[in-house]
Amino acid sequence: MIFTAAATLVLALLAPLGSFMTMPTEPVVSPPPPTISAYEWAVYDETAGVMLATWNVNERRSMASVTKVMTAMIVLDEADLDEIVTVPSMATATRGSSAGLVAGEQWTVYDLLVAMLVRSGNDAALTLAWHVGDGSTDAFVQKMNARAAALGMSDTHFANPNGLDHADHYSTANDLVTMTVASLDYPDMQQIARIKTIKMPEDPTGKTRQVNNTNRLLGTYPGVVGLKTGDTPWAGKVLLGVSERGPRRIVTVVMGSDDHFSDTRELVDWAYGTYGLSDRWMRPFFSEQGGGATVAMELDLTDSTERRLAAMQRIDDGRWRMSELTDLPKAALITDWLRSVLPSVAGGDR
Image 1 (cartoon, helix red, strand yellow):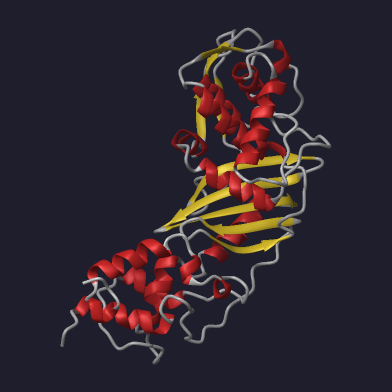
Image 2 (cartoon, one colour):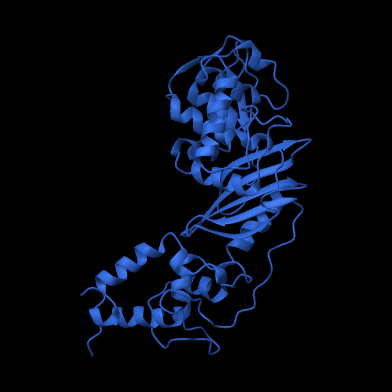
């Protein structure tokens, strides 16, 4: 027999996948995505690069304080974390959520980012925009819109750096997924977004300031590691969610929600009941109890992996079934690896 055990294993996998082109065909009943209160929502598998499910995903709406994710990206692009910023009086007069800044105080860029992303301070957002915009928040907002255009966020426009309601300040769930994924390239922002509670610099009277994260899912719901909440009269409740369980990272967006925390929990749980990229490759030859095996083969799988594969549910038509493996961002890497390790008779280069 010319094939190694590894080659046999891969060939067994390729057969039911139709040379990377089709899904395995074992019968699994797929539940529909959950019904939630949000007017607009999206669930994105960032690991595989595939949108799993959406609702009203391209309808423009106010986005509230999730705006501050874009503000943070511009600040991190153009300022050092240890730069000293003097709080301007115009920032302390802003409406809405406040970090309690006092005009004339001096804060580092890092502390202002914490005040903005953890406490959702509108005063901190304006202070950072004033600093990076060289004294002009309008100049800073122009940078925000330029970055949105560069990311392909064609249904997004910013009118301010903090997310207060404005007729010319809007986005869509689809665009907010794009922004959230872009934010994952900023480790400082990801670290700050995970802070649940933190002491901030003392106020001018010496009083200690402590802020708690507005994202109540942090530390209370498995896998949730970020990212940003929002809530205004026009926007309703908004939440950009990032969760990590095992090898998969899921991004969720809910807009116009009655309960953004409950809605996000529902979407996260549903997402992790669908096929991940590695599961798609392994599921066809996983031998399950009850005769559901497609390939008779012994695999050295951990108990947790076996439980996950046994519980894995397919998602509805129009999602994975419409997303061929060759279309996935990671498919080319997997194909190149297979061709490098398989004999030529198995379709490889050797």
